[in-house]
Image (cartoon, rainbow, N blue to C red):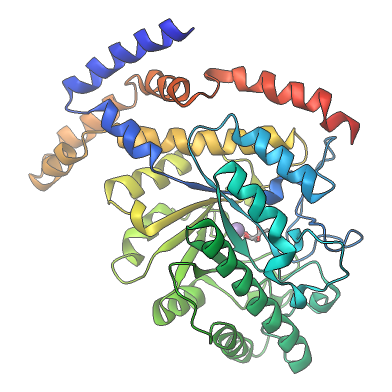
Length: 418
Ligand SMILES: C[C@H](O)[C@H](O)[C@@H](O)C(=O)CO
Ligand SMILES: [Mn+2]
């Protein structure tokens, strides 16, 4: 296998060189990209703080594949196994509900010490940690409102949750020596047409401003705000819409989170990066695959993903963009879901790097759209797979579908017994 992979790579390298693409440079560029892999694919977004609590907030997971991670330790072991077949060094995204503690503690009382086991694990694994405050799956979110609630007591509770998430993210940044992005997604909204669309938004602004009041050095953590078109149960009005958060991010110097599943199905999210970034501090992405709606299917190498990575690479936006994943499928092996989604996102990035970008830009400037079309179409059948295989081999991870054998062994040894 090793020899065949290397031979195929050498040939591919020649083919790409003919069109002015340096495959070694593309591989080096790919090595630098850190994905932010979401922990919640491993346990169906339930967390470990409230074992009896159902998933709420208008998101849902279908399927009952055996082996859901039932403890934080299970989840870390599963993540370690999945990471071992994904090339590169990455980050893992947590949520408040993944606190690992024996204490009876509520979301608003969480402190960095409740995440110490995650920090220790991250150090061992050499991964960074990103954070998400949890604003759902809790009795105090049952009305459908949290930070935008008209009830001050409810609002204050969730403000404390937001502040706690910032302290935790800061501690991740300090302990691990890399910035922790702290993402805020707030599910608040109405099922049916509201009369007053303004007041909840004004309350959300006030709550967020209160949460962000304390200055924390950005080298440790920065907040990202995630809008949404709608969720199940909040079809008519979402307080934190896209325009709301785009404006919030711009005026407060925060990151704007673009979740690929949160827009109208025909909207091209990749088109938004270059419109926002000349004004904004940066982006957080939640790479997801909406099938007819925000279904959070496992990411695959489809046109939508290719458009996302192409935009980031062609417009030189990687330095200002955090590439997070966000999907949850319990109908298949959950580790395989992480692996497919992560490997495919990396593959799509490699495809984007393997292009004569400067030449294409020049062609476009010269107005030669015929050549632009011809070149981009021919590029699609260049031997990018040989470069990917070689990258996997050199990174010490399985080439081709052989990673599945390792995941199956783990399933038979570990997952099946849960
Ligand atoms: C669990 C996550 O916070 C959640 O998926 C959020 O990011 C989202 O996308 C909700 O639709
Ligand atoms: Mn998301």
